[in-house]
Image 1 (tube, protein in one colour):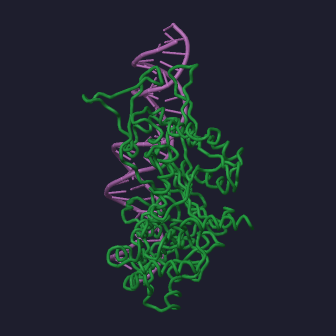
Image 2: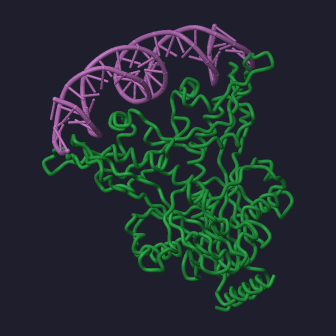
Image 3: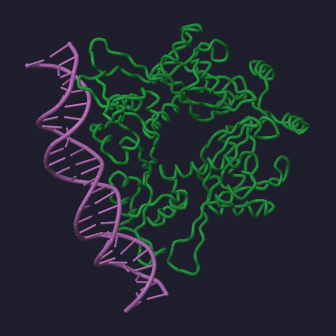
Length: 256
Length: 256
DNA sequence: TAAATAGTGTCTCTTAGACATTATGGT
DNA sequence: ACCATAATGTCTAAGAGACACTATTTA
């Protein structure tokens, strides 16, 4: 205890930060059924949740949800708490993105922000939109958010970085599972990947994913108790084989 | 200005962090010529630089070099400044690793540390070892650092994370160039990769790296003005073709 | 029966991977 | 002449990639 006293004294000799918030880029993949056509994949869009600020600074501008970290929690815990406050749900993928500390980034003082990104389901955000004052919460496509909105602080930079990271993670890890039901068809998987990474084009996707020894490991056919393969014709006339992710995430190398 | 006053006032109502240091995991690849045998690759080892703490807390324990971030600089700037202070050199690869904020991690108070890792050349560290009190600076293999030394704070965790990250980056980016001269042979490159990632085994490394269309892009044969291929017999009897990295870093995907 | 999507056949070319062989220059 | 390492030859099996074709269900 008197150790702490000693330190507090020392620390008070120096300028210390005025606050350390965690800001969260909450991504969701909206899924809109197409009523006109039956038996077809829903339209999917990658969106990000933003909140309109009411107070100075940046009043009226759109900002990432976030909150200040407290002394008795880690930054990650603060982000988790914030995520739960926004969605009402504990789950979901939450991953550290980076630190934003450019001097002057926040007019309130020396504020060092820690950015996270989360992958949540659309329904988790709806309750938030209903609870608080509606109209102060919005779901935007990345293009809208980055090109059309007036964003608070350095949040455009944060969202840009988060977008690049989610694209990278989509191709290099199995986070696609966060946007899919436990069992899914390969067309669904392909659509999810393409929604997040439009540049991803694989004409022979199904063929490759099912035949390549090295990639095989990440996916597994779904079978019933008797070992018969399970399929679904929810999105197509002809039933399609259902797959699930395994726990295996391969190590990639540019030299292999 | 009275905006700032307003904030400082607000911030002072809340508990704020006592300090935000940047700590750097400085990796180097030592290169020791083998005198007994000629025309052979030098022995290489991956090492990390640590400093023995003189003051409370953790006096006598080994710690990462680091320093507190100031108000007029970003965390990255603080790390860059620290790196220069330690090595006397501006250059070198410096990359953000992550934030360490577990409550109680530092007995001095609420200290949120930001870890970086740097790749430096061995000679950059020698001047530091000479200048300050020698014996207070050490170069250790990862095994020594992680298993034999008493490390300060949560620095074991940080070093472990940094080790995993450098291994991942070694395979997925071209940071190997930081440990190689501008022109190098494929054996040298292979040795560097294996020194950092011992699990990396490619019996047909040379064949693959020179013949695979997709990998070809990261390396380029060195040629002289007349376009004749350049080779070196520094490390072998028969001269070996010299290569250089291009600026191209391929995008990897588990689905491709 | 037509439409729509799932999945396979087939063919060519490239790569993986293992081993053997040849090439080069120093000791 | 011998050695160590670089680089190529050779062979088989597997994957990439394109395109045509068949399969399964609903409207």
